[in-house]
Image (tube, rainbow, N blue to C red; front, side):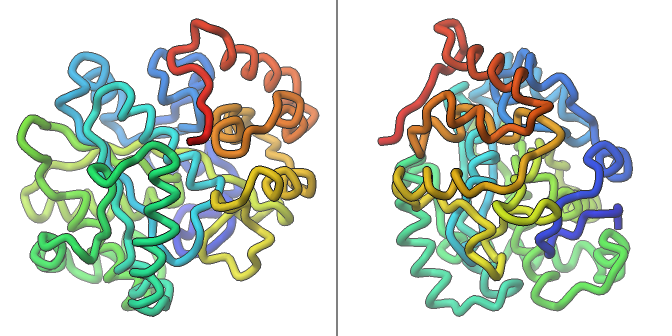
Length: 329
């Protein structure tokens, strides 16, 4: 397993550059000024075919289906918004968008009860997605999809447990193996009529899962999926931890369910500065759900990034920015 990456843990990667190289991904180092608007937020890498796939988005976005998913083991948080902003931009560009609320994974891999996972999926998760601009036509609860179990059976028969374990270089718990198969059954579903390409959009901590799913695709004769990966959001209090719905201490996260007043208090106590890239806490992340001011956005940057942060904020609020600032609804 690449050093510093365990998809089931809450730790940040040691070095993103090393991680991208070890996983055989394509580094997207020019994201601040990328031609594709959705790369401006937080994307750092993609699968080997990602640039050709993005060209397809530019030429014929209606032929592309963008998929992502979030297990319902805890509240959605600011780190999830790094991914959701990519999905939302794809939607604005004309791509078909499908978001899965992965209640089955919350039960299998996180130990949540079926009742709690389903209630959260239909309650706070669905409401948060609605506030962010994703209606019922874009969001589905995984346990309610009749295609999941047949798809999981195909995935389970297509690849051995040994092959899965080789992907992770460690022992997987049974529930974690089931979670990978649930994810595969969702992402490898053929797109609806009119779409020919599937792009998965996730945090880079899901890269090992995507590698395993593409191994399942190879073994079952299905097309591989392209994927875009975003950076991970540092936790509020520990520089080596990421925000995670499954984190034991709620203090690690900034939930998207917070009121603007509570969000401001949370950011005031944000002890960790991201030392690498301005783009990990970009203006539209904070201006959208929380209504923070430009000065407050910039104050979250480390000293090294402050000047670049102000430049990026200026770029965001310029009239010629492709999407323009968003406001909460």
